[in-house]
Length: 406
Ligand SMILES: Nc1nc2c(c(=O)[nH]1)N[C@H]1C(S)=C(S)[C@@H](COP(=O)(O)O)O[C@H]1N2
Ligand SMILES: [Mo]
Image (cartoon, rainbow, N blue to C red; front, side):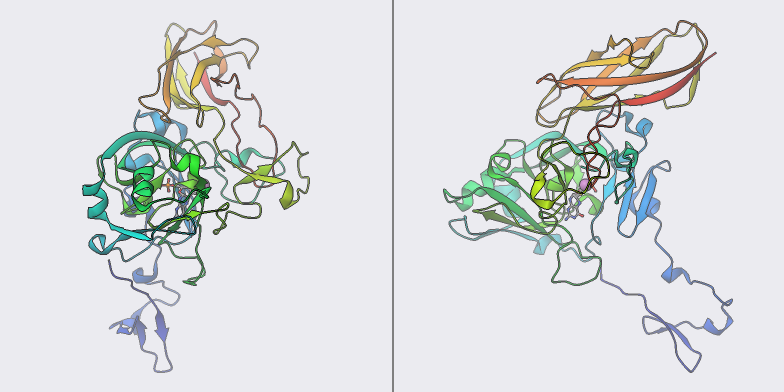
């Protein structure tokens, strides 16, 4: 792909040009007409999205799923939410791509081509849950700025690549290493190439987990451009912001990584509970690590109608950051009583788990089905929106759907 810039010029001559190219019948264009070459590209076509995906923002692209779209056990590309902080890199040459391991705490700076990674190290495939830290933000009151995600900023795709720890070991990591930070090829919204849209990372202990991958495949094929082609860090169970797309450098740090969106209020929550709307100082904020326990009902679609005589088979997924989900329940009486669902174990650590249940409704009418997951530490999802925080992160309130029984 070649970097192109569309610039429309209509000089004194009255001759319209697009990027220096003469628009031959430009003088005949209806007044105020926006030529195709300048129109927004269609994200549905560009990213091959399911027609029911919801676009929250076009610059940068932020697109979410709806609960019923997430029904597959492995999320297909067409139903994966998209979260960009900057502009998708345009010119990527896979053959020229390198990953450099650098930083104060690396013994030797090393550079790997994609082919080096693929041939020198053992590859692994895991299904990994990635949820945006701001998933559910739209429910906070007072509202928090940022993408107003509802429930659809989560996916669990299959990632193939090499273990970050194997590559770090190969480069040689010094004893004082505490953190790694990623550097990526996306472009800052300002167009300023000296600024990085995002450069986050994880502590060494997370970097060294078996499931923390430098991935080059997603769902059995090269990673789609929008999800990080040709190389992505994948750190399942943590806010997805830790999983850098389009990465070309990993810095091994002797202190907490201080890249773009690591400091200030970004991807941080208060160290202690605060009241809604309260001003919180930066020093009282801490970095989000493992994501909290959560679940989603993916069948039926909210609003569906069923016959009273019919058993309703509900299903969905549950996940719990670094932990597992140990219990899954549903309620049809607004949480007065809870009934156990069937819950499967994860296919591998950090993958979401599937649940199902059979419901027979006592009488006709309107119902809400609420779902509640509990993790292996005994933490259950709250029924209502949990701890308000300035940036609107970590809303793991119970998901609910409406059904009519006739
Ligand atoms: N380079 C880069 N990596 C990135 C981002 C980004 O903007 N640039 N966004 C992060 C955030 S905030 C999220 S939630 C996930 C979204 O991943 P997805 O678009 O593949 O769903 O990517 C993360 N990795
Ligand atoms: Mo995110």
